[in-house]
Length: 632
Image (cartoon, rainbow, N blue to C red; front, side):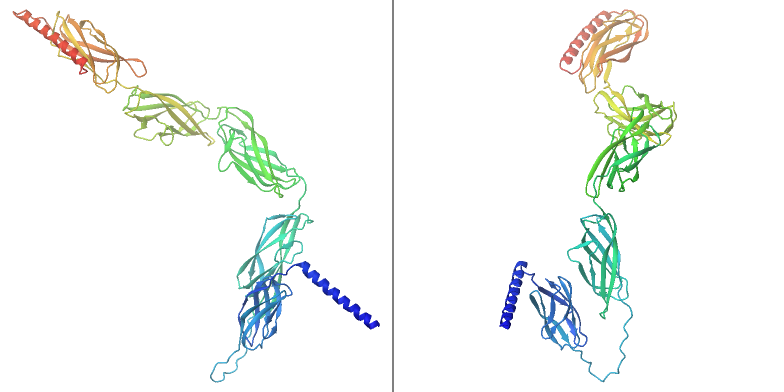
């Protein structure tokens, strides 16, 4: 009876265990699928055997390899995609399928070929001694490594990259790198199979790691195991470590303050190049990273070269760092202690970003006691005024009204590219002139030849003059001043007698037929025409003509009488308004010959009457020509 009860209890226990196993398997879900993809090598000799590298997916530590027709092989788990298996010597020659099982199974048909060693035909060779193996072994070491980020934060992941180097005298077979964990936690696959690593060759391995949340700040060693076999199957282990810096996550933030500032030189003038040295201190609760410093007052100071900001190294808690900004003081007019605004941008290791602006003082002097100051004291042109098409000489008077010497003065008309010169163009030289030096209180004349465009319109043209010079400290100063050049259209008038004047006789009235012709292309705003003479008495000596278009004329017929003989000069004056509505004159001197009177001969009166009649018809003809625009 007792035996029956005991048998029933054992049966019930076995059934419960089987049911529990089924429930556990069902709860765990489907196991990963085991798949074989290939092996190497695929041929071995029966006499020697060897080690197979088996590749696929879904491998576990329970997976075993089997040579179908021979049996199970000694199997080593590398990772989920790689196994190694030892094929012992003595297996009969032939082609074998390779099977892997647990979990599941998969088979590679005709995966491995075992061949028998066949002796060469011929006479029996003399026995030779077995060759002595070459001494040596693979030696693995970590040649270089990097950590990204360089300073890792507690509770976060980082990437370590190592360079494995074989410094030994044999190649490493089945070379492998593993990250066993310890201080840091590996993420993902911890083993990396490199296969064969030849002598003096390297391989790069990357592994994701995590910093435990409870780790405090400091430097810790990351453990790495290197291993390899030689070709005889001897196994070697090389444990290594690399240092990783860990930053703990605390409370608060970094706080940078400018504790000291110094300018060199200490007293600055407008346009001076100077260096500003700042001492930054971190008075916060975290390290300040990504520190960028720059001058924020562009109207007071600009960079002397490069960017307007400089980068500084991280600043630890209660630590200081020094940065220098190369700057140029602007053309300020205010003297005294001026405030320069400094921008500060920085972050921390947790990704925070901070920005701040603080001010430092600069001592500025605008006095001219030791600085040059150049002015255009005057200028003149020859000829004056100038007209379209003229070649002129421009003379500029440059004075140094400051207290210091000006060196390496360059004077530029317009701009450096020759622009902004209006209708003027340089002739015989460029638009830039050079003066080696100009002492305080001195004046120098700078001469420039110019030509006026023939199509230039009349008017006043502003011509910029750029001055650039150095002071005694080598600071470059620049200034731009304006001069104005007037361009007037010069009238082209032809003045003369429109018919010949015969020899006049003393005491006898004769005519002065004066004509003014505009031989130019543009209108001349003529007002009056006058004739005068010191040797003649002239009647009707003035006449209003009015504007003359190009190709038209106006005339005046005055009457004159001489009281003495000889050559009489007649001064003809044409009054007109120029392009600036200013009265101008054009003069011309004509001559008339005067002789003593002759005795009256018979028939003279009749000849004089015919001459007077002829003069009347000439007047009518000139009037009609004037109406038709053909000249009077």
